[in-house]
Each structure stands twice: as C-alpha cells, then as structure tokens.
Length: 284
Ligand SMILES: Cc1cc2nc3c(=O)[nH]c(=O)nc-3n(C[C@H](O)[C@H](O)[C@H](O)COP(=O)(O)OP(=O)(O)OC[C@H]3O[C@@H](n4cnc5c(N)ncnc54)[C@H](O)[C@@H]3O)c2cc1C
Image 1 (tube, rainbow, N blue to C red):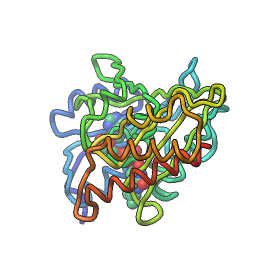
Image 2 (image 1 turned 135 degrees about the vertical axis):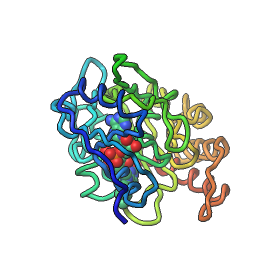
Image 3 (image 1 turned 60 degrees about the horizontal axis):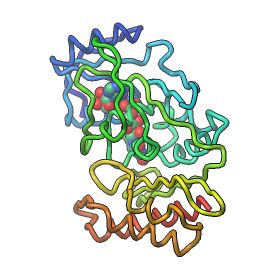
Image 4 (image 1 turned 90 degrees about the vertical axis):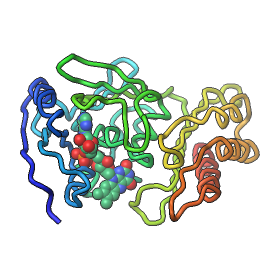
C-alpha cells in the first residue's frame, strides 16, 4: 500500500522546525527523522499524518559531543554512528555493543537514536540504554527547552512525555566510570528482529565487591526500566555465577510481563532470567 496523502515540510533550522510543529501538530503533523518506523506504519495506513516536519536538513542536529560528564546525542545521529566507539570511555564500547543488535545495516544507516526514543517501542535497544543509564531528554518547542528524566519520559507502549509540539532535540547520557563493567544480552527469534527481552547491566568493583549496580530490562514490560530488586541482589557481593543467578531470579520475579499470542507471562519471565544472567556473565 502507499501512504495516505500528506504535506512534507522541510525546516532548515531548529527554530523553524519548532515553529512548524507548533502550527502543524494540532493539524495532525508529526516529525519525520529516519523514517524507519514512521514510514512503514504510514505505508500500512496505521498512521495517516496530514503533515510531516522532515528534520533531516537541519544543520547541526547530527552532532555527538562530550559536555562535562555527559555524552550529547543530537536528533539526527543515526544508529550507525555508534558502529565505532564515539567516545573514549566504557560508554563508547557499550553503545557499540548495543548498536549491533538493532535491526539490520540499512535501517541503522537511516534510523536515529532520538527517533527510537520518541517512538518508544518497549523493546527498542536505545530506550533500554536511556532507562538503564538514567538519560536526560531535551524537548524543544516554541516555549524553549525542557529537560525530561528517563524515568518520566517513557509513559507506556509507544508513548512518551513529549507534548505533540515538542521535538526531541538531544539526549544526554552520563559517561561511565573508567573502571565500569557492562554486559548486554537480548533474545529475539531471528537476527535483526525486535528483542523479546533484553538486559543491560553496569557496575563497578570496590575491593572485589559490586557497587553502583544498574540492571535495566527492555521488551519485558510496557516501558524499559531499572530493576531495583536485581540491583540490590548484586550490590555488596563478589561477582560470580551464584550471585548472577540470584540477580536474574530477582529480575524475573520483579516484572509484570508483557503477554502476546506468542509469549506467555511465564515464558517472558524465563527470557528475562536468561538475558539478565547472560548480560552479567558477559560483564565479568
Ligand atoms: C524491519 C525493521 C526492524 C527494526 N528492528 C529494530 C530493532 O531491532 N530495534 C530497534 O530499536 N528498532 C528497530 N527498528 C526501528 C528503527 O530503529 C527506527 O529507526 C527507530 O525506531 C525510529 O527512528 P527513526 O529515526 O527512523 O524515526 P521515524 O521513523 O522518523 O519516527 C518514529 C516516530 O518518532 C517520532 N520522532 C522521530 N524523531 C523525533 C524527534 N526528534 N522528536 C520528536 N518526535 C520524533 C516520529 O514523529 C514518529 O512518530 C526496526 C525497523 C524496521 C523497519
């Protein structure tokens, strides 16, 4: 099928884009970034926006830079930008590891980091990264900039705290400590498919014991989030098989699993148990 008719608007500056959005969002206008989620759903006529504000020609939105302790990722940074480490910090390697699990190469060349967050698929890898690392989102509109913490940003399946006239202009990720360890694992039926469950873990070691543990889960519940029960099972313990299994068990018990025609709650819990344990094993 072909998309329903729409008008494409091409702002050249962020200022112009937010003015267009303020005018067009109430008339069923949407942002177009990489188009890797929006265009397929338009082609299936699951979405029929009357106006698209195409941000691809706005100079400067493709920047990635380090500001103090934060990595700043602009709205036009593609998934493929992370095929190589973008920063000399464990975060650079973490993002490279995760990027390889997103879809397929051509999709990674077009799809954007910020578009993935704005789309908020529960299983999206970048949403998991943002939730696990407590990212900050920068929402721009004609009212100015608003900072939104990851905990408040994800509001449900494909739903965020962005207002209809707000553009996600930047995401800020905290750099990791130089000695931080991380692990990532996801399960999907075929390579390139969305994950049925995914886990990201980070922590540090002090005197051989785990500190600052973060355990994030995606694809398991309507929103990606940190799992405090699993983090508590790790903090203060020496890394090892027994403690990794205990944390995985804690995560599996803590969730309210998403269910669908292929995936029962029990199966999803089992997947969570597996991906958390494997992510922890990778981290060690
Ligand atoms: C076959 C296939 C497999 C895929 N597999 C995966 C996968 O395994 N993991 C994964 O994470 N993703 C996957 N994707 C989705 C892909 O990563 C998309 O690129 C991503 O979800 C959306 O980014 P985009 O830049 O393409 O956004 P678009 O498609 O342009 O937009 C998506 C939505 O977000 C809004 N939006 C986009 N940018 C902004 C912004 N800056 N501010 C406000 N709103 C905005 C749009 O209005 C739209 O509603 C897959 C896609 C396909 C087609």
